[in-house]
Length: 429
Image (cartoon, rainbow, N blue to C red; front, side, top):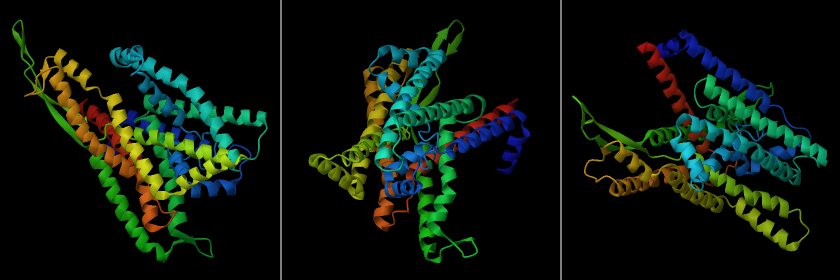
């Protein structure tokens, strides 16, 4: 391990890439520390302590939402735009051609459409979030001009983060958007541990609360178990054997080799959790708006929504079902067995024991449905893990952030693979 680290910092190009990434992350954390004007700090802390949904949204903003910084939306609008564009490929054949059949130039054009869609989405999300926070008393009542200025600021902050993420992907190492979210998760760990497990002495020094030692040990064991499960499921795949028919061209024989088609257990990543959070955001917004209304019917609806949101087990079950269903939905969108079967047939490849064409497509769909069941159950359990921890312990402050661990571990694994690929290339040279 230490030899590998030494190789990383000895190589000039690799060292420059890593230092560039660290520099970009420092810029991001500076932006996350600059709040927009007119914030009620006490009300903001109360909102985040009592609202699990805002805590989860804070994860995807890279930790920039909990102090309402100028980059409070994080890379959420860009992620949403990318998801919408992928869904539109099912409706608009031309977009599917651009994404799937036009190679690298088509991917660049597709990404440009996602960037352009990010701007209106950031404006809408920024406006909705500011109105919600005003009704909650987090932000002072703003004039229309002040609200417009704040919308421009946070929209610019979101576009700025999108640009930083693409700079990391282009000139650094790893996936830029994922690394920004990872940086926000890691930066929030020290303060969360201090609030939960530490006390401050009369001299002003932190020390571990003795009554929390059993909880700390249980927390560590559970955290290690979750990390191990995330690694196993993230790296898990079902290899489908594929053979290529022999072809004779002139005096040479081509093909005749055997390989495999890997089907990942967690084909959808964390996208189903983002989908579910987007759906669950609406009851929160409607409850905040209706609670300020003078109508008795609106007050009753707001009360029912708040009761649903405050019911840990009911809310958790609904959240689990949404993540489970969205996992199957997103896997169906991104993985087309018919297209895979057609491509294999065009390349003279086949699955041993399965006829090419529709039988191969049906076989792939059947295998995919089985392994997606495991991935969907896992993502659902990861998503509701904080609710389970709170329900079992009764401690609102204690959360085992399964979603945070899933993102963090996935980003680390992906980045390590890219670093290893760079080292292998340089050792080969």
